[in-house]
Length: 99
Image 1 (cartoon, rainbow, N blue to C red):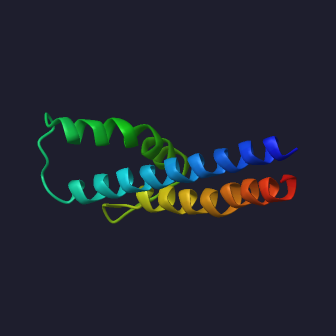
Image 2 (image 1 turned 90 degrees about the horizontal axis):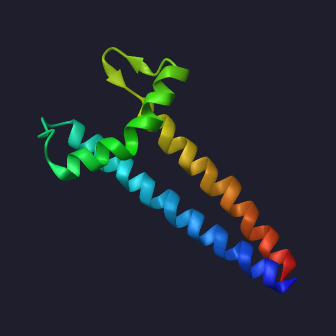
């Protein structure tokens, strides 16, 4: 059973790393949205294509725009923190019990 425990530990580590990377991408998108970015810049295009599908889904599901301020990145960041605490933590606990 230690092989399954090691596998789950690795999955938890990779998932935590991917969620952290997406958190930084969301943060970069928010910071860039405060200025007038060049829409043809490759970095701006990457940030938009990486974050827009999820942010649009959050905007459609919840009314998160108040007084012209978009709070959908805050909802996504809160969801990332929840997944890191609940899902990654649960996977790590299961992995420790199986080892």
